[in-house]
Image 1 (cartoon, rainbow, N blue to C red):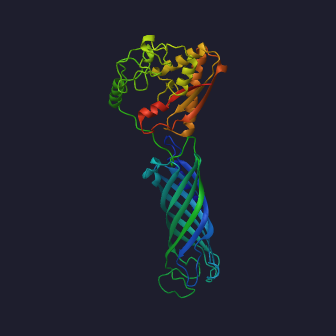
Image 2: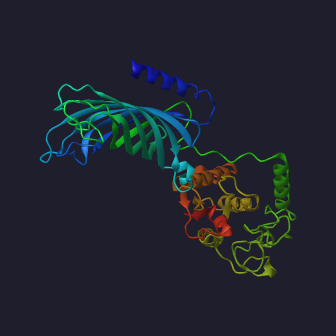
Image 3: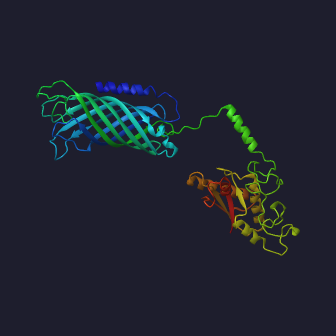
Length: 430
């Protein structure tokens, strides 16, 4: 009856906290199995093994928030003798406890470097039934003791619904009548067998187990692993931030590069510029592309940038493309081309129309920020977007192919300007 009443009271207490609306799950079921070690007291000549297989534990935990919660659990097992050095004994135990829980991993901000490992501290009290099966004192009734319990539980997150745990717990029994082997009274004074002096002392034992946490609930993750988003800014803070952003995004010369990034803020409106707003001269003949009639073929200014001698335009175009002079650039985590680089797509489209025998591969790249798998997919979306732009301009799809190559590791990862150059689509003439 005591066990039933305790369980009902515990579940009723925990259920009272379940009404709070949160962004994470709060309930979990915990199971574990492993070793126990009976420490003291023992009758002289009796010993327990250092690691005695024989403990099981099951419980329910409820987290008020990401850092603190409560749990109720039941543990049971058997103490036995150390083989070869101790007389035989068998002592069964059944333990009930209610405990407070602190998520030390969250308190110490472990999620700042990894959200796969956790550490819980738990402590509380309860009561136990100890049944001495092999006592030489005769038919001894079981001990009913109170206990103080505490321990640490390490966690490894396997999925959003499951975690592997390793636990070490210390238990101190109060008002224990017999030694843990059940063969003498647990008394600080000498007793006359078989008279029970009705004096009691403490008993100490610990457990070490491996187990699983099963997370319950409809939310995406549990409180153990939930990371709260940044707090909302005030209206004043938002207004200030928006004002700063507007100032930063001013583009005085209309080349698609905001003034705070533009290193040449007075370029003509039709000029082709690079990611820093500087006029591009693709063929290096000293004539910027917007004034050059042959932007990929070097030639004198007297001939408007075109060579005087007859040359094969396709060879110059292929050289310019394949050596990376023509690129479409993108903002961080975006698959939409930046305005200033859209002319690169027009150059490619115009050339393909003039040279119907040429085929082009569209190659997407990303910078090194973010997960590698995500960057592979992002680079492919960028390449596919340019592919669709060329098709919409009238290019036959059979002349085009596209592929995402993921991260461009050839640039300096710590440089914002270098990372911008990595966020691009390049072309390769086949």
